[in-house]
Structure formats: structure tokens, C-alpha cells
Length: 215
Image (cartoon, rainbow, N blue to C red):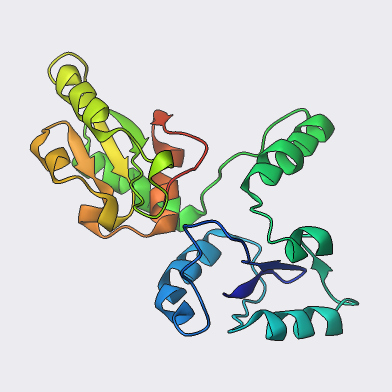
């Protein structure tokens, strides 16, 4: 498993028993380096990024730098290998809303905004841009998108609504049938990265997806 620093003041270890991550270990974590770097790039406040090839090295680093970094998640959640997805939505974001009376907003950096505007102008034109997140993960299929229903919806919308659907997903999640829909654009066919995918979500008129977010 790997651990990493997302910001110069926060350490976030990846350590949980969720099946989507259970196959990541010290021997193969570098295979996921490109994904980690893309995710880190989204953070406009990133100071430093460290990758560790074992929990021991991460824990040694964290314990030796407690005077410099605020460590998250807390020790109890880390030790229990808690899957933090639900804690983030049920506690972190909820507490933020209680305090700020608003939800955090997705704001792309200027270069990403300029890229997304140019992409939409070229590929969507005068139609309404709508991003749609598709998910297909063999390691955790119960959370997957029902592709047949979405494709039926795209086909139904063709000629009825002036819309172009921009599909946001990983390359391996692309259903080949999507490319048969004239009103569908698969973002990964244009080699987008995570920041560009999020910029499309930010620039679109509507985003259709679920809590898992674009991947």
C-alpha cells in the first residue's frame, strides 16, 4: 500500500480493506503512480508529494514530523483500516456545511478552464454540454453504473434535445456502444487527465453522476 502527502500540511495514507484497493501493495504501487500524480495535480494548494512503499515507512515519517504536519485520518481510523469515503461525506463535508452554510465548489485553475472552454466549443458547438459519469469496476461491481439504461437514455435524447453528453470515466470503463451514439463524446477518446475531466464537469451546464465522482 502507499501513503502520500496531498498538501504540505496533511498526510493522507491509503490503507483500507476495500476490494478496489486490496490488490495494491509494495511490489506494484508504482504501477499506480500516474493515477496518483493526476489526482495530486488537481489540488491547487499542493506543497509536496511523498510516496511510501510500506506502512512502516509512512508511519515513521508521520511520527517523526508531527511538529510540522497535521495528520489525517486520526490514528484510530488509520489503525482500523477504515474506508473513509463515508466519513468524508457524513462528517467532513457535513461539518463544513454546518460551519459555512454552503458546499465546497469545484473551481478549475485558469489553464484547465481555458482548455475546457476550447474543448466544448470544438466538440459541442451550440448544443448544451452535459457531463455524465460512467463507472465500471470489476473489483467492486455493486457500485457500477447501469450502462444499458444510460445508453437507452442517450438514444432516446437523440433528436429530442439539443444536448451533447460528455462521458467522464477511466479508459477501461468505456462501453464501446457509447461511441455509436452521435450525441455522446467520450472524454478519454481525447486522452483527458483527471484535471481536464473535472474542468469539463465545471464548465458543463449540467453534471449527471453519483457520489463516487468522476474517475
